[in-house]
Length: 325
Image 1: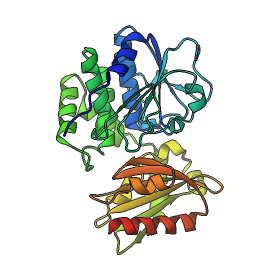
Image 2: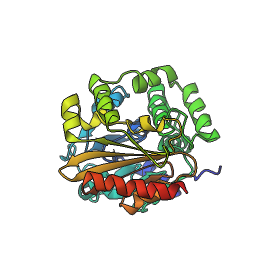
Image 3: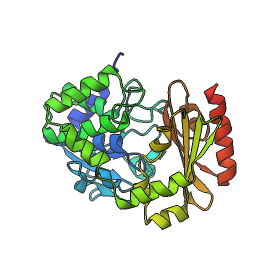
Image 4: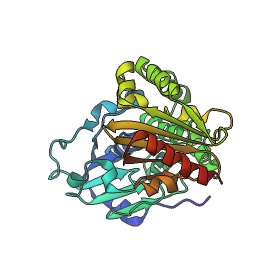
């Protein structure tokens, strides 16, 4: 599979700029966080200033990532913004709105780094490689292009990015290049056992209780090929859980034998929901997410929508049924 090299405009901006603010999408995941934290360390190794700023707090499983304590969180910009920064770097955001802090970021020239389909190319420099399994792989290539030898902590952050976006090297985007990148990152100091422990063996009690609540609302459709689950406000309350505890719960229904597509609707307000879609093989859920103003990858996508939960579920089941063919 061919790789899209970092454009000259991006390399020039990273070499010439002195202070950067890095961000990712709302409700950050392992690839968004691992890539931003890894790139921040790469920039600092070049003598640059780099501050990661996300609107939403990170899920608990990622708080052990090197540098996570330095992430600035919330609507209020970091100290010195925007005057003391040269560029904003958006990691894994197909649109600027996905950051949740678009108005503030627009005060700076933007560097757009992504691997999702349907990127709006909104940056002064845009580097989009839809063939990359994870943005973390692209950041690893970027370090090479900048002549940076990464250290163990940077390798750990980027390995986490690759690990999470390939579902622990289980998803259909697990290419030979993904394994090559992982192997290189291990040689550079990433510890697979340590990262796996963080991701899969350090769940909070609230996450497990929320999983139990979710599975009670599991429904199967189309002869068991589609699974739907809900996470409603009262379920979070009973589990004493927050939105951060819901990270990756959508993958559990996909583990059912015969299930080819999954939809999770997580309540965010009275009639507001975040939809997460997962699928196998040729079932394209990115097109469905895009019809709701969202996006992602062929087998993993998301969107936000308003409506009554029962009608939304029925509508999505119908769309997934058509995608099954």
